Length: 514
Image (cartoon, rainbow, N blue to C red):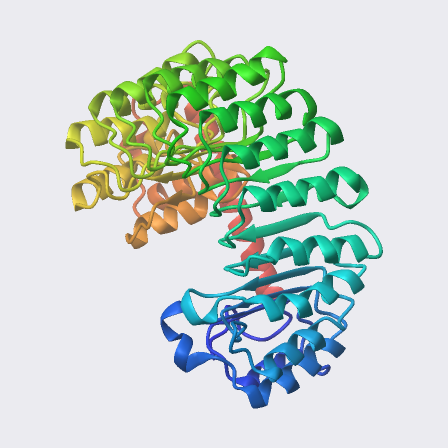
């Protein structure tokens, strides 16, 4: 068994291989307090790695009596298909007796380990009887009755409503969405604040029923996930108009991998929010929807008109090229403070001019961008990469940058990044280096990793002092480094040096005294 962290005062454990004795040891009353446990089996090991029937009863009883456990995730760990053993179903009954579990996730697997009808009958009692349950997730629940079981359980449920319901990869169709939304319309007090129906089989008709519920219920939803369905422009227009007027507290909206949306759908989405003068959700995921230049421009204009930047914008796998990216970023030239804090452009077709425009925004001191992901994009010339990386030197907000396959694999580019986060050519250069970036892709350079680790300190003055002292005073002191230094910078550097050595002396005295 491999644990995510060693036992000690840990509050969580991820089990990636199932040794029943070790699972029981984690759940034992004498063990450290475990509040979250994940039992996960890699998909390629399903036949060999399932927990044996003989051990399921013991593990179920241990979970049932553990009063510290609040989160339980079972990923392909037990067989819940049509060939489910009575031990597996009894295990679900035992888990359902733990009234302290607040978050429960059950992930079936592809093929023989998918979650089937009989298992849902046992799961419904868990939802009905656990008054403390806050979120419930089913993934790969392939039975057609999955929504029926869920509605029945929610109808009989005692206590407060669930805060989040997730049904992913569960074959949910238009009629299933209609059934669920009709139930919520008749029982608005039982509707969750967050709902995710990713990778199912409903389309515009299902979106109509969701919008119908939103119009009637008002401001309930904080998160809606509709990735990987069959939504088109009409469905998005319908749901966007309802959300823009009624769901003013919506924080997260995910519609990625609905390939029919395209520019017409994005334009309709933007126009719906603009017509009611409401803000676009703080976290917007529209990856892989075939967005083009017109859609990008409309989206950029809408974001640039807001009073504050949204938290994240995910645009990966959209075949975005220079023209599309420039259409988006040109809208922020006059006010770069409104660019999203997280911008994900993974796996697109960015080229020279797109990166140049993006780099110019990064050089602006008012730029609000904190996380930029451009992994797996097309290779670009080294000069373009150099210009993009050097732009980070002038940025004080960017914390995470990922352009690992954008021509940055060679040593020359790693040296370039090293000079950005800690330029040791002079004291002034070190002082003016980037002290904000803390993550750079899957960086394999130990030196750069150390620089990034130092940058994680929130006190940027302290970071600058440590870099200057370590590289220019702790090793080889050179008086010529002070030549041509600006007076204000010189005073600041000398102050840092004095405080740094005073701090070192204090620590040394404390160690001797101890």
